[in-house]
Length: 448
Image (cartoon, rainbow, N blue to C red; front, side, top):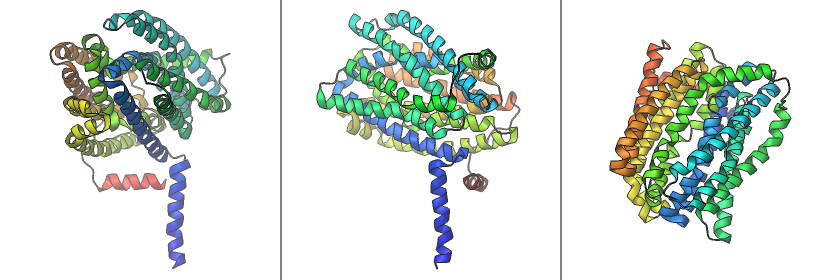
């Protein structure tokens, strides 16, 4: 009997070891998704704490302050985040040059974004006191921290150090949760205190992974002109897509902040953050998935893309049904009874978030085939649609109008990406349903 059971036990132990430390991209993706589930749970916890302790109006002020550093960091690293992964994979013998060039590029662009943000921010925060505006401007120092974190995370992904990539993404949320709980126990939580907790936590997270980054990458800043040229070339072509993506992700709040009261913004912010639970796989797609696709041949990358699309479509559809049915109860139970009024906005944003995940899968296929310019054109068209609908619908319908605008823009983007697969990449569209072949492919990847 033991001779029969032993091989089974060995297989389970081997699978467990691969899931926790294996280097295969599929196992790395599973670990990354697991990490993101943990991050989503922590984000839910921080969102619940801020909503319950700050209330709708305080939550709105918190959003008006904290929106800017992550937005400006995304704009500063637009194109660079993909370029780091791409260059690390294509030039594995010189991680020091790639890392040095990426950090230098990120520092310069982040500094420019801080200046631009400080000048533009008062135009959006006209409904807030001068002290809130000044505090938000001072918090722009966090742009440097956020952009450095992005570079470090993408460098780990590009060199196959997926465990540290996941850790770099996990630590800011973990530290933020600890900081919020500590503040809530020791003092009265205010929007400014919650914002400081967020930005200080990000800085501590970067400091935590910095020693490993310096040891493994050993970034150098001398004689990196050649690598700067390569990174700049890829970044410039991918930057429009990154810029548009950042604006699409934040365009709703950029329009809502000057048009809605802090209380109404607080309701929308809770619905938006809660709807992001369906996007737990997105960071894995942006880092590990791109890294894997960049190392595949054309047939292999298409197979990975199409299979991922089918599994995600099934999972996201099931998730949307559950959240639509239970959304009102969940909002009231988690955030407080008054936030249940945001259920209509929440249901629409769940659909928009799901469309974003599906679109991001196909974006990685374009990037892996060195077609960032095409992605940029599609993203630019999506941004135009999004802004036009937001400016038309928000003044009339408030937060609900913003949610409708995002759903429409998300559908346009995904359909355009699929159309580009057929017309520009000359690839067949993925089959929309799962069959036995997909499960056999998944099992083969688990065994590899």
